[in-house]
Image (cartoon, rainbow, N blue to C red; front, side):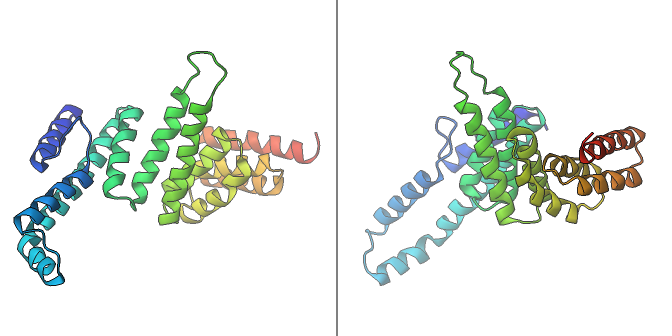
Length: 246
């Protein structure tokens, strides 16, 4: 389905829900209006008995609001992944943020935010040539926090574990922080050659040469790609030379 069709469906859904305004979702505002309406219709219940009676009377409406919010959160996630497929990372990031307003404990949404923030950091250039790169650093910090939140919710979410490894090694220059997450990743994805390469790089950067060599040997024994085997052999030679002080 095209992005345009997805957007059209989202717009229709938002209009039906009754709170499409300025292309921004505000489910709390909708709920407040519905509660106010119910209070006015039921004479502003005060006592416990009156509140219980109002709940029984409008239970189906409350359920309807919850169901609409859930659907809208799902559509924002779908739209975000469509933008992600098109490499429209800024728009995707906005959608995933809106989805998180509905599903704040969804680890995959945090992973997607991390991916988008990482790519947006590359676009956060100092266009005014002021020497200020705070915007780039803010995106990288958002990526880190999002990945960490994802693995805090689901410690076996391999996509986020791998994302943290890439972020720490190649973006933040903190390869020592990558090691535990990549080790956990490989304990799950035991035959991931890409994961082995990245972890071996982290070991090498932290002078754990024996572990790096061991991983390169494992890559050589595991991969069927002649290109990756040659790369592992070359990297192994570099590590051995470094370990012998050559």
